Structures are given as structure tokens and as C-alpha cells.
Amino acid sequence: MIYRLLFICICCFSAVFKLQATEALVSAPLLKKSLYYLDRDLDKAEDIIVKALEEAPEDAEVNFVCGRIMGKQAENTIIYALSYAKKSLSCLRKAVKLEPSEIRYKLGLLNFYLGAPSIAGGDVNLAHEQVAAISTVDEMQGAKAKVKFLMATEQNKKLKAYLMSARKKYPDDAEFHFRSGLLSQQNKMYEQAYEAFKAAIQTHEASSHYLNAMYQLGRNAVLSNLYIEEGAEMLQIYIKIHNIKMISLLFHGLI
Image (tube, rainbow, N blue to C red; front, side, top):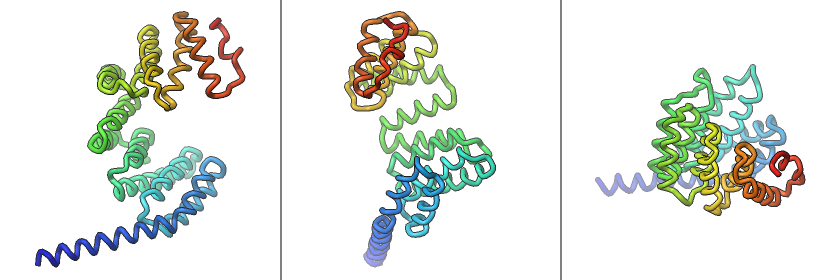
């Protein structure tokens, strides 16, 4: 009897896996097309992702992209904002349900709960639950989610303490240093901001936070009139990386 139940379970799992694999193959071209139009023609992107959902309703990535597109539609309209927000939430929840170990999906749901008004499904408590869920999958990503949560809920005292702890625990990750620097800069604690941005740059991490720390270190020099030469050097590097031809504007008041 036990072996028979085990056989049935294996067969069921195999059937589901084959269905999902088939759906992924069918939906791939539509998924790629919807992402292409995401920043070009949102209505067209919506039409395509709706068709993809019809063909592959159990594809987690299709549901996730649906959540992104419907969320963007909600931001761009007033009359249909609530309807789009509900569609976005439904798709994001399903994506998480289908692949609970995928952090991108959980972060998408977290962002929705934090960004949407309560009437559209926004919920601080559910957002906090997602932070905990992300932490169980990946501790460092959970820490980043916690930072996002504290920022969104404007718990600056807790955020400052948490960032200090995270910087010690994850010294090679630029984001925690960068966020700490921004918080110090906002509070006009420019020396602390300098140290944090400097730490972010020293990670040499190939990320936007690493590059933005260069810019912010230069900006911090403008605001504080401290470490002028180093600030100018960081801005020069930042400009070279981004191939920006506005040196005189960015250096205004710095040299």
C-alpha cells in the first residue's frame, strides 16, 4: 500500500513537472516579447502577457512578469488603478506559490505590499512576513529585504542600527555601506557618510551600489567641503564609467 501511494505521488509530480516544462517552452517567445515592450508600449506588453497567461497559467515567470506589467499599468492610470493593482497582486502571489524558493518573486511581492495603498492590497504586516520568508531562503538577501522594509516604513533609528550590524556581518557587500552612507548624509553626518561610501567603493563589487557610492562620495564632498580632491577623483571615475560628458556641471562648486 505504501509503495503504491509513493508510486502515485511520483507519477503526479512527474506529470506536474512535465506540464510546467511544456508551458515554459510554449510561453518563452511571448514572455520575451512582453519584456521587450515593457518600457516601450505598456498596453502591448499587457496584451502579450495576458496571452502568455492563457497558454501557460502555471508558469511562475509568466506570472511574475504579469505582476510587473499590471503593477506598472496601475501606476500609470487613475481610473483603472485598483483593478490593475489587484491583477498585479494576484500574479505575484501565484508566482511565489509556484516557486517559493525564488527570491525575485518574493521581492516583487514585498515591493507590492510596501508600495501599494491598503485599498489595493498594500499591507505592512504581510510585507514583514515576506522579509522573514526571504531570510529563510537566503540570509543576506533577507537582510537586504529588512533594510528595504525599514526604509519604506521610515523606521530610521532601527534602520541605522541594523545597517551598522549588517555592515559588520557583510563587509564585502556594497549595498549595506551605501545605504548607511545615504542615511548619514541625509542627517548631515558627512564624516560618517564619507566612511560608509568609502567602504562601499573598497568592496570593488560590480554593482550599481558600488558605482553610486562613487557619485555620492563626490556629492558628499560638495555638501561638506571635506575630502575635495578625493571626491573629485571619484566623480571623474564615475563619469568615465558612464561616459557622461557633463563634467563642468557635475564639478560645479567642487573645484
